[in-house]
Image (cartoon, rainbow, N blue to C red; front, side):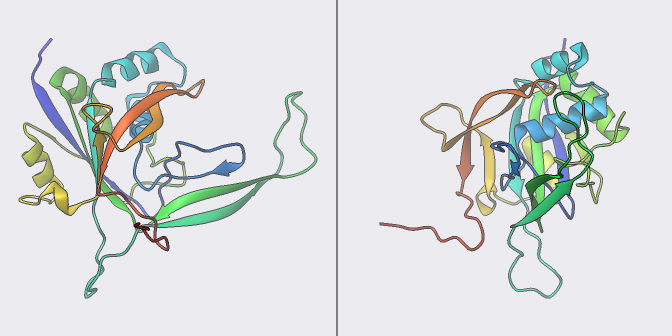
Amino acid sequence: MSTEHVYLALMLDAPLMSFGHSSRFQRRTTALHPTRSGILGMICAALGAAKGSSVESEWLARLDGARLTVLAIPRRPDGAREPLPIRRLDDYHTVEGTRNAENKIKKDAVLSHRQYLLDARFGAIMEGPRAVLEPVADALRNPHWGIWFGRKCCIPAAPVFRKLAATFDEAMATLDLASRDLAEFAVVTEAPSFDEGTDTLMDAPVSFATREFKPRRICQTPPVVPPGERRVTA
């Protein structure tokens, strides 16, 4: 098997996105950036790896060592002086006709609060062996199942796959970010060590069928501050 490393460049662009990593019960929150589980779930759908199948297990294991870098690409409407901030939308959601543990229709509607990201656009670059990422690139060009960003209503507004590049700089250029420094963007990537990380997320999937995840230490630079919140300094 070839040990050559390549860089899979993806563009995540849609009116709505949602990337949960700490949702509890009927409160479905979203992170301010794509999670590893969100991107690998999209890849598994493109590959046709069913939840809980041996194919899913194999691909999650093969992709476990692939290094992921995500950067927020600001949207700037024509004529605007400042880029649009990424915002969270809270959707009060009701569902009727759901079933209980005894497989009986519930009398009352299920209520939930679901969050989405608005005005967001992200570039994602995954580094790994060509033998692993080349089949992923082929699947994203012609996905087995539909792909979306976190939820089925979050459909891509532009092609997701951009290029399988030989270098990180080439992948950046494919995202129309040639000659741009990563310091210009809000970036999330895997931390080389625990001490170098800024946060820990339970978003490295082991099985989507059983919703089993393991922790991932990330480095987030600069820290993302939600709109409407101020960073308080001593």
